[in-house]
Length: 496
Image (spheres, helix red, strand yellow):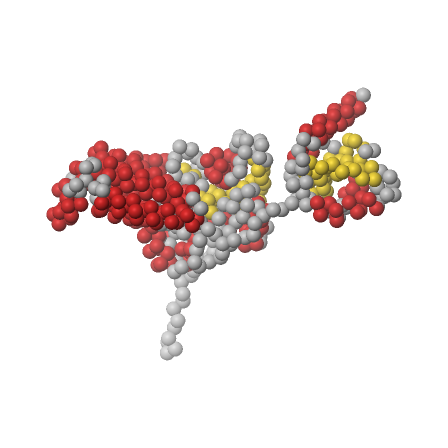
């Protein structure tokens, strides 16, 4: 009696699901009869999620023309690799919306089969748009999780590359894959990352940016604590270092964990250039970021409190440029900074050709008009324009946004206490960075805690022959990347 009740419940559960799905126009249920055994069978599927040609070519002819009597025979007949037999109705909904076809027999209501017939709608692989480089590979990730993992496995064809997959999102059921190299990565990092992913409680995860905000160590920090990239070659390199890569189905960006602050100012193109050129460009970027944050606050602090620091010749220029300006330096600076941000945001949101026109023409017209109208000085206009230009040198877009935000606290502290306020704000910033972590690893490493061996690929990049060890902060199982180059034996003279 108990067995009959259980089967009856399963049957009613399937019928209620079918009635619910029939409200959608893309749900199809088609019934056929086998020509030899006269057994009636049905296909149920979501037409927008499956490739019907797979069904018509690899499944239907075999089930119509070859004899079978039970659902288990379906697995032997059809020319489809992924065929699953089940008696659990709770799996039906998930499988249908994952691109499977449900096969049922009228003579057996308690068992059914799932045929994999997913439709792959992905764009072709293109060149990176955000992390474009003149030298190096021209492949970028796409929105397909399987395709992205394929790009990594093509570059790391080793059994140690592990890809663990899980589903996140109560509504979106998003596939997330965690990649790492077994035997190199620190198992504690993998455990921490996997636990955080499993503990995510969110309805719809549609992009990797959601994951960054949901698993980061400090959710109130403006700094991104996971590095996102669209380059397969970069992910391959960080996996070899002992880090973890996170892929989200539907997102063309991979996440790298753990990461450090200095990584956000290094372009992957640096590794394709001579080490001296790479080091020079990195130092330029770091100087540009410091210039972008501090130059406008220093201008406000100097004109408001520290006239004595300005040379006499430069003072004459500043006095001349501000002679008819009715606004104090702080309002003048805020006006120009906000104008730059408005132009940048408008250019980013408009279509590409229109956005470029708005950015160039708007900057020239507004800048010239504000100086002629006496609202801003021409000196400050040059300073703000240079600061905006310097902020664009940051290779990672999300870090560039954080740099843009930092200028405003420095401006307000400069207005309050001058240079002392700038120093105080800098101390607050450094305190925050020292406390910040990425996957429980120091975010400011190798600067703090100081690790001299890790400086070989941070502010500067030393030759590859000096980088035979993996970063200490990762605590990898195998710290040696390749045998250290030995000392060259001194050739003896012929006469000796």
